[in-house]
Length: 46
Image 1: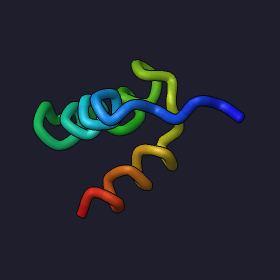
Image 2 (image 1 turned 90 degrees about the horizontal axis):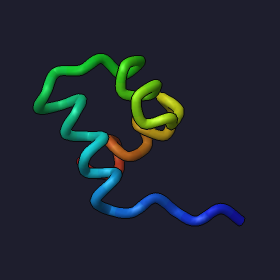
Image 3 (image 1 turned 180 degrees about the vertical axis):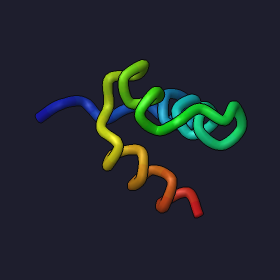
Image 4 (image 1 turned 135 degrees about the horizontal axis):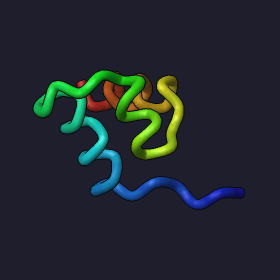
């Protein structure tokens, strides 16, 4: 089973979208994660 992403990494990804104003597609390519993963992290944060 793959190792889960760290809290710091998840925070950095969410901040790139919400605070820095990057598009999900840009962040997905930059950090090499799926858009679905980002959506799950953002919904879990709320």
